[in-house]
Image (cartoon, rainbow, N blue to C red; front, side, top):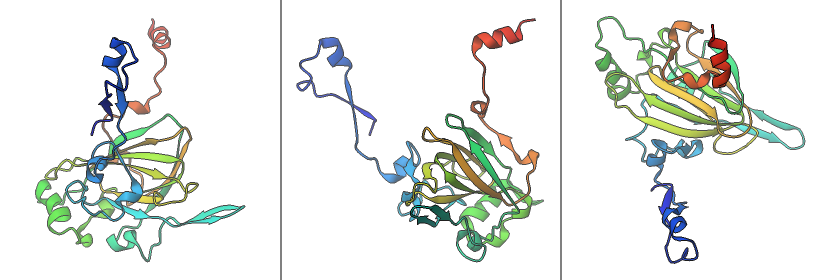
Length: 248
């Protein structure tokens, strides 16, 4: 369903012809979850069960609920992950490096992408299908030490996250969803595991700053940081400033 619909002509008969012809009203009908996930965006908490999302889910992506303990009059205590249980334990991925990032309101990161490791002699497309389609639970096959997997936690603010599967041999699926920080307790307090080869971008979805923590399966390597359509990350000066700056 489109975001707007043509208005009922009889209801708006008190308007002039030009305004009435141009008038639209917003549609508040909610599209199916799979359609929103691959389109306008879904709430992260809606994705925890995954029912009916097999055709749009990006293989290897994990979204798991975090536990936030609200302490009235004091604040809150929130867990990130446990090394002995939960999704990260199940898939055998425990980060070798942890980092934090602050994003000012009105800024954005990405799209950026990390290169998948293809073992010598393996066809890249066949290797991707083996890992994520034919034997998706063979976590021991994943070369975590040779490629960068991310697990991201939003601590404060509201994040809009975009994921696109760019791996050879895999369908180009898209996921778009909203994660809420610990100051907003609820089902949208989640963490996200992102495999290499999946392009990802995020931006604050409110007027506030965004604070995040993320773990990676390898230590930071600049050569693992590929950029796609990332011009939004640059702070362009006004055109007249740029013209004066460039003047010889």
